[in-house]
Length: 106
Picture 1: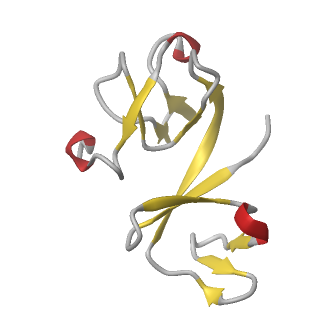
Picture 2 (picture 1 turned 30 degrees about the vertical axis):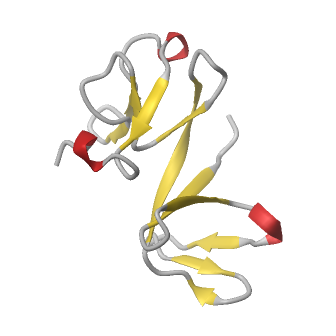
């Protein structure tokens, strides 16, 4: 499985993908994001790739909402697995909790 992340920029309300426009980010163990050129990159939420794709071959990340789920994709600490619902590859990503906060369960 490829380990991949995307960053939700809270201020700009858009995703930044690692490697966009030649920019390189460093993620520290405490979750702090650093831009190699500019230093600390505040106001970002780190979203990890689950290793799964939806039926349209779109990568599924933490925080995504799938059409057959009652909440967001998230990591289940107790069972050490992603909460993706049944048959993630047969579902479609319909949004995420950052662009559409109404989906956020908290």
